[in-house]
Image (cartoon, rainbow, N blue to C red; front, side):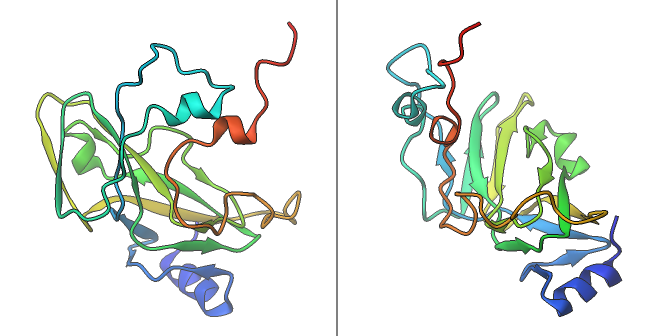
Length: 185
C-alpha cells in the first residue's frame, strides 16, 4: 500500500491526478452529483442481455441536491465528487468508512478494485441496510481509496476501456459491454 508521501510523489510525477483530499495514507472519497435513483421497472424481470431492460430500472438523475434521505432497503448510485486518474502502474481499492457501516450504510457493494488507467468519477453504490432513514449530504466523506503499485508492466493498454474518461453515466452498461445469453450450455 502506498503512503501519503508516495501518493504525493506520484501526483508530482503525473502518474496520479487527484484534486480531492488526501487523508492519512489514502484518498478521501466524498459524495457528489448527480444522484441516480432506482425505480420499479414495468417488467418483473430485468434481462441482463438487453440494455433497454437494464435502463428501465433507473429514474431521473438528481443533479441539484443538498441532502437526500436514503430509506431502509433503498439503493442509490452516486459519483465521487472529485475526478480521479490513475496511471498504468497504479491501482486502488475502495473501502467504506466504518462509522457509516455501523449505521447500516454500505457505500460500495461490488468489486472494490479500481484498475490501472482509470480516469473519471468513481461511482459508489449506496445501500441502506439499517433500520432507519439515513440523511446523506452533498460533499460528505463516504469512503477512502487505498493505492497500490503493480509489479511489472500492465497486461494491456490500460487507457482503452470504453467507459474511462467520459462524463459520469452512473447506470449499468453491462449489456453494452458483455454479450450474454448467446452461449449454449
